[in-house]
Amino acid sequence: MLSEGDLKQWLHKDFGQLDRLLLILATFDSPIKLDGLRERAARAGLKLTKSWNLSAVLGRSKGLAIRVPDGWEITNAGKNHLRSLGVSNLSPSAVQVASDLRAHLEKIQNETTRAFVDEAIRCHEGELYRSAIVMSWLAAVDVLQRTVVSKHLPAFNASAKTLDSKWKDAFNEDGLGKMGEERFLERCAAIGMLGKNQKDELLKGLKLRNGCGHPNSLKIGPNAVANHIEILLLNVFEPFAV
Image 1: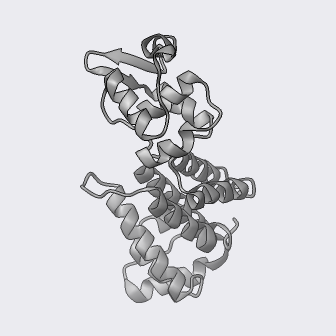
Image 2: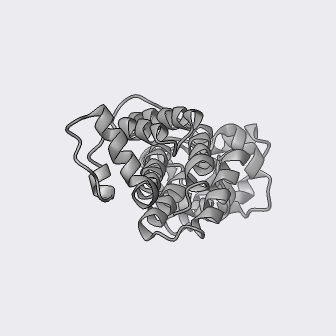
């Protein structure tokens, strides 16, 4: 949840003993002995003296941390507790994107889109990066499809038939969903709903979404997610407020 670099930033804020110990535990991916906690705290500039009574403090955490055979570890409840305190390894730009999205969320009238965007924001804030990519993309496609239906449907169907003579006219979002997303973006650009540069950026987003939507070795971090969501915010959610 946190890197050692992040730990230095958070450990010296005005937190109590338990919260500071949870911060240290949040930097480990596996259970750690008390000596390991002391060593990491010392590297971050905090000396855990005997007066801390680490086992007693963690033992009173009410499930935020638990003791297992290999040592102590933070639980999901403990991580959520830290998030409720504002603790995160998100970069300032990533935090700003989440804030911008929440501001935009209030402007979205369609309940389906609003639900997608809300879940994408929560995934982003919860550091579920691949899920944030997928959910934000689903929200963006939903907005684009509804924009086509409400404003560009005849032109879209005509353009689609120039590409595929067997295309059957779409009358709603479900009909548009029968077209692959890459081809859909190309048609949106062909009818002038999207500019070429917008289309190119969204195609990059589609490629990232496809990479995140299937089991593979792809790894992404908060900055990549922030960039992806910001592109969608500026090129889909804001200009196509439907």
